[in-house]
Length: 509
Ligand code: NG6
Ligand code: CA
Image (cartoon, rainbow, N blue to C red; front, top):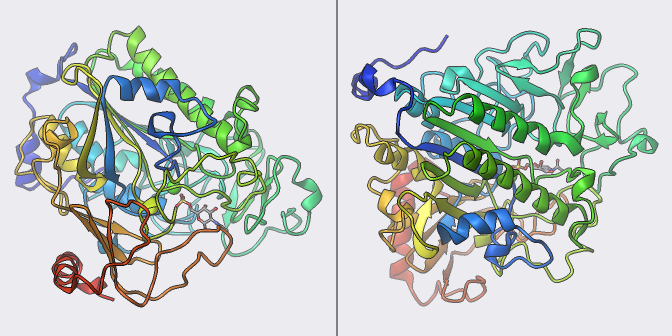
């Protein structure tokens, strides 16, 4: 099924057969990718009202970064960037994807998963996908194997949600086919119109017995929660939101147990803490922040289960774990879960301005922890500037496979920064906001170019976008971007603007 680009690149990746035998000592790699987890949402990053002992443990024995960035301030573009090493603005269709989007990464593209697979690793993806499936948007047959799917881009095994928990179809997809498929309830999906006789959150609010929407999310109802998009059928394949974390984690644990003899790469993308936040009963009330806080506790539990499985198999020492988030936090993202009322002094943004979707720092500055006991022996905090766009290149370096094999947009030689040996990191980082505006951070300076768009997110979340028709320049020695220095430093702006234009001439505003 997979058409690998048979150029010099794939040849240079060939690994001698001997290196692929069992009991291979090469390190495992697990990317734990949280959803909408803010810079201030973990205890080790100063979170209040929620305990995250398992994540703290990674930080206590690893490196905690304070200047790490996701590629974009929403999910689809960030995920595209971290998996391919290519900026999402180069690729059509990388805005927040519908649940029936066609697969965005084409089989011909090289992904991080391809890299590992070609090096003889067992590879797998779990949890939130949000990068499309199948050949044509809106035309998938959800009752048959979908193609292309994740095995076409390097993941030998996958157990995923097609998009997000708030988007249909609300079923898990295992290796390209709906998991626990129920032939009595064939699945239909539409992002255009409802199916005859099916209730919606808009018309049947009395059926929203688990959670009501605050904005949007009023189309199909699954598990007593309104969603984006329409679906029919599913039967026993439909997920229960309260079990999603368990389903994802137990599949990942199973994969580790089955593949412990072989090096593996796992993309572990949690649904937490995206909306609808509806954690399992056992986490309810474990924080005083309601569902949002309890979802953080549930996320921490998932991390703990992964650590425990590695430990039980004697694999923790030889496993590189990178824990980070796809974008910054949002408090009300469309469901009435009382996230705002129950913050009780907790600051998801960790003192940064803006949030998910925005150009301001809280949009893309995210928690980022590197845990690798084999090489990292003590707890450290690094201020190095790092970006998820480098994940692909850092992995080629980490695996010591041909370093001429690099992604389009990642920097080279960033492994030393990710391992705590270089405390400066990148010279600059580019961040993309929801409206595609590209900001740039260079040293302690942050420049947001002029762009069109409202000052506040217009559809519901109370978030400042950072969009302005005027250029903005901030010095992050005061991390909350509120003192615009653009008039004082025109030359600095020019320099930063030039870099943006060089990277993305077509995106010039
Ligand atoms: C928005 C959704 C929001 C969330 C976001 C994507 C509405 C009103 N809001 O359109 O709830 O799903 O898209 O989030 O529909 S992301 O983290 O996957 O990028
Ligand atoms: Ca997200």
